Image (cartoon, one colour):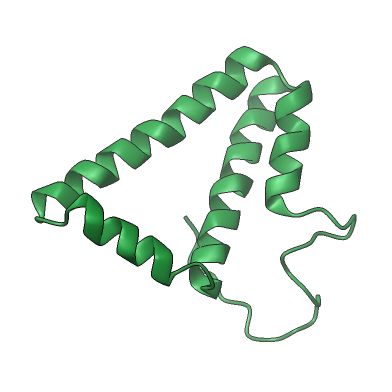
Length: 100
């Protein structure tokens, strides 16, 4: 994932591209029309990554309740929003490059 921080505001709201789409909406649009085998494979890779992170947290004695509390605290969090957008952007990129 990228840790790039755009400190200037040359492009306005970075959460929308110039067509007014968000990373999430771009993913859902692509996922509907792309080769479903590729979409499923890439989505499975994201879930596997999530499972690995969950196991790492459990190994550090961070339980499910602590995770739920942290999720509740980060409902409004610009860093988490950016990271979520990055996950969608990466997913779209991997799907599109395999469908070409």
